Amino acid sequence: MKRSTPYLLLAPALLFTAFVLAYPLVQNIVNSFREISLIKGAGSWTGFGNYANVFRDALFWLSFRNTVVYAIVGTVLALLIGLGFALLLNDRIGKITGIAGFLYTIPWVVSPVVAGFAWKWLLNDTFGIANHWLVSAGIVKKGFSWLGNPQTALLCVAVARVWQFYPFAMVMFLAGLQTIPKEQYEAAAVDGTSPLRGFYHITLPNLRSVTSVLVLLGVIWSFNDFNMVFVMTRGGPINASMVLPVLVREYSFVHFDVGKGSALSILVFGLLISLSFVYLKVLSRRESL
Amino acid sequence: MRQVVKAPVMIALALVVLVPFLWTVSTSLKPLPEVNKYPPEWISPNMGLKPYGDMFFYLPFSRYALNSMIVASSATVLTLLIGSLAGFAFARFQFTGKRALLLVFLLSQMLPGASVIIPLFQLLSSTHLYDTHIGLILTHTSILLPFVIWLLYGFFTAIPREVEDAALIDGCSRLSALRRAILPLALPGIGATALFAFLGSWNEFFFALLLTNSDSARTIPVGIGLFVGEYSDVWNQMSAAAVLFSIPPLLLFLLTRRTFVKGLAAGALQ
Image (cartoon, rainbow over all chains, first blue to last red; front, top):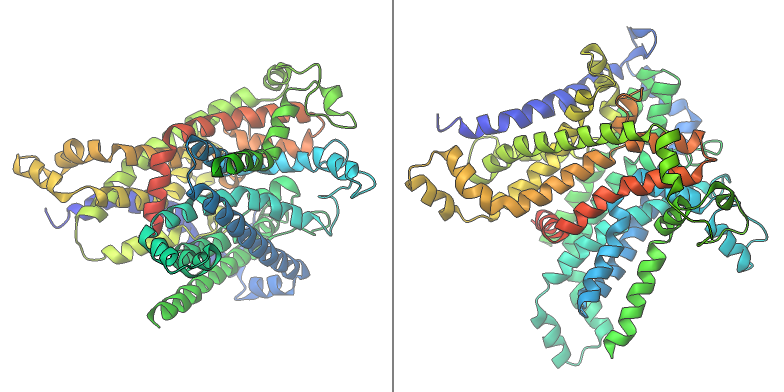
């Protein structure tokens, strides 16, 4: 009885994970090796045919490039802004710090759909306030369709993504900052170290582990992010902002080619797993040096 | 002195950061002719709550709100029940396969929704759970579980073992020790976890979009996500829906943010 207790306690959670995550994942791998359509059902086995189809598709390569850009911009900018805000909030100056902290976190608390909607409306070419400001400031002559232009659509979605993600980085950095022993700064002050050098030699090294967690999560979450792109552009115009998760839906639910959609989703999963693995390996090697 | 410089900077930054949201709030209060007016203005003379009423009248948002309530609260309760059993098992027992199981839960957070959606869609269709509340509740529960288990694992580990031992000596069984001695102490942590679970389900878009196809099960984010393309001329009503939809998460966050932030940080810094 005693030995089995932990397994009994874990059973419901495992059952759920098995049915809704593990079984579909395995089934998805199976699907990726056969011809299967959402309308006509499963057909013959094709080996790596679906994977070859994905690799032959120019849209896949475009989406891949877009996803990488989206993940890098989304993660780097969000981390920089999050760190800046965390430093600002770490130096408490009374009640206002708490209020500001709450206000800065709002973009993360509202739904990604609301965030996407708000940015889409903000950037509206005629009635959005953003264009009005740019026109007033003389930066553009007349309202510009930021989301309707292939050159700018992806970057605008990435900016909205940064807006949604930086509060998470801020909260984590703030927690990291609060674990740094005060004595380290005091000792540095005695030695006459400038605040800038203190930041470089004390703050940043102490934030290393938080930063590495944030980079990993930021890249994985941006790579898997479907919401922001779907709500703001649906991958358009002319696929200029197409990213991999949206393309999976496109393959499976718009072109009904479930085999190809499955193959693509497995590729994304495999890529993320290997990326995390390499990243963690590199980190742990650096720690041990 | 420092305060005099920093306080205005902090407030100014908050305003900048909140522009997209404030612009949505402003739009949600304007009648349509003033929404479609150039140049746009933050404050207009005829502002009022009419778009909110119109939104419920013209768009099926009262139905979506009901669906969201049912799905998010059921998924939260279910996730917490199952998650606290698992979190307790990880925090208090040594057993074979513990590390491997923890790793499984950690890895399943990395799983892209896109990699499970089609078989899940087929599974729910064949069990007649596609486009139903139950289908969404079960799906949300399982995607929330991994992170909830990690959070609760952290909270339970932080509770001193002696508390539990004392209860065991007093003749409680392990389970009733969990209920009587541990749960009350873990309550703040559980509250924060509940917030996370509720927000996760309430805001979830991808599965809710692809596992429903009628108003009987669609949640609010699906409504907003779909209407953005189709009825984009009623930006004020859409904004009203977006604002109303954001109120429960904001309120919940305001109430529990201290514990929540602490729990998140503890889990991440482990």
